[in-house]
Amino acid sequence: MEYYVYILKSDLNGSYYIGSTQDIEKRLDLHRNGMVTSTKRYLPWRLVYKAEYPNLSDARKRELQIKSWKKREAIENLINNAAMV
Image 1 (tube, one colour):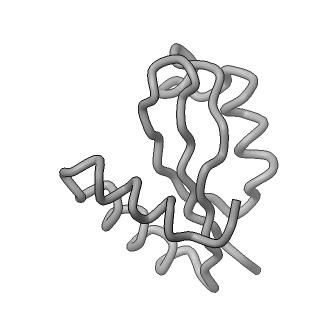
Image 2 (cartoon, rainbow, N blue to C red):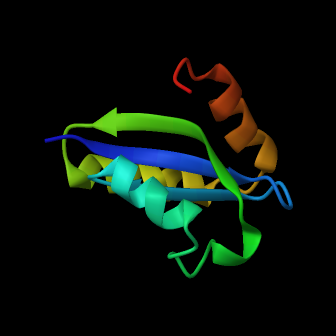
């Protein structure tokens, strides 16, 4: 079973949201439909990055690592260098 780390970008204000999930399509639908408290006021969101991990522990570690980066530039470098979305 795969787990994902993903980054969304708000089209409203350009902010990023970083999360992890097992069912990425379901989670993206929740974000897009305003069902996630922390993202509903900055709709619409678009997926700009996702990475797959073999287990929840690895995905959460990566999510927390990305969230710990203090510079927006570091997140944008990750997105720009990914061959995913």
